[in-house]
Length: 330
Image (cartoon, rainbow, N blue to C red; front, side):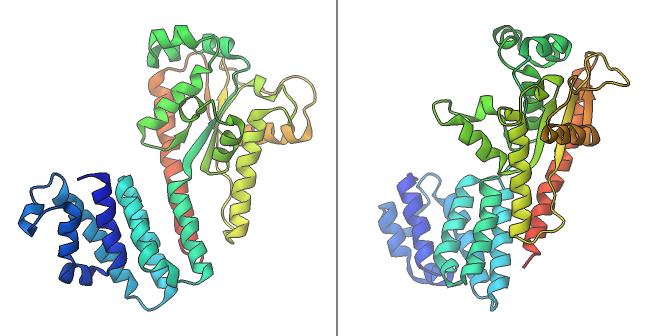
């Protein structure tokens, strides 16, 4: 099937209810597919599976359409869209959204439309989390953790990037991706021809959790020129604003601070000497209180991988709880 044929078939289910379509609209299907008889349809590559998937979506939307209360329809539509999203088929997610919006969305009140759109954004635009780190001490940090890097990265990658890219952040990205999480990592997710600063902060504001690799150098710049602080602050403000806008009183920012303690000192203080600005001091204090794991020169890949797996499971729980709380908020 061509993309145009798929789109045209989905549009038919937008125009007709499932029952009406099944009863009387096969002639339009034959026209779209450019065949003469229903039997000819089965010879089209991919048609049977695609038609089954789309008709199943349309049937469920028709069932939702028959529910009496708008709020019930909205909740059912949200649950259904979430189910399709969890199936990890982007094509079917887009078709489900399209049929819902064509068949029932416009019958809802403005408030209910907003509720649906908010959850749609949570599902399709938000990522599980954002990885924040600094490149300001890249050669030093890569050398300190070279055993861990050698465990996980290709030697040519290390040689090429050891003086310009924080490779611990790359290892963390790799571990989290192994757990099938949607991770924003700037080296993978940014077209550097874009306005990359705006894009980074946009991703910060659309993350369910915040992961940050903390080392002494992260506190060296003032808060206004400190991108790691601004990423942290952007995430906090976005979560707090979302909680306030949607009356989710229990929703709080969720942090996973991974602390660099190279020599594995028991009394290690990752803050630089001297006074920090109040905002940076508050950030550093929070990182101490909320640190998820500390890594040192002796840390090896199996140990860190296990810790990341724990963090990944917690982040999935955070996402699911936010979605459930939002769904129960109206």
